Length: 175
Image (tube, rainbow, N blue to C red; front, side, top):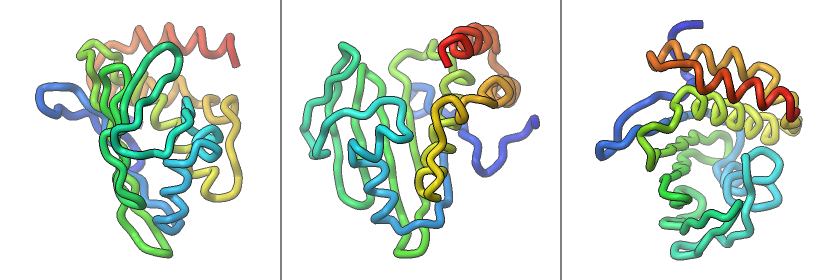
């Protein structure tokens, strides 16, 4: 596993900042995917943190002592927000049969461990797919292969895997 597949995240630079982009082709309607990415009750089943939101542009967010703001909400196509300086964006295209989801995470801190973050988002995208397929994946199940996914991203991105390996040790103890 040394080259990115269509399901893998891509590390790129946006306006001088490192960013991760994931694209998934989903066999669900765009409306179904919109509910999964915008409704708190659905987000808590797959996303790392669910907050109560409309979501509506200008709406303030707060979680874990950090703040953010919804910057764009155009159902069922675009949802963007800032949180703790990072930028996040879902773009959905499709119809009643299928949906193309693009997820973007632009880092505020260029020292954010890219491979570790990519492995996390990869895991959460897998959880989303499970939810949409009617087979929700637990946090523990989703993270079972995290170490291997992280090593893959570290190799593909050409980054030091040490921060992610240390994180993986701590994560295994907590699961």
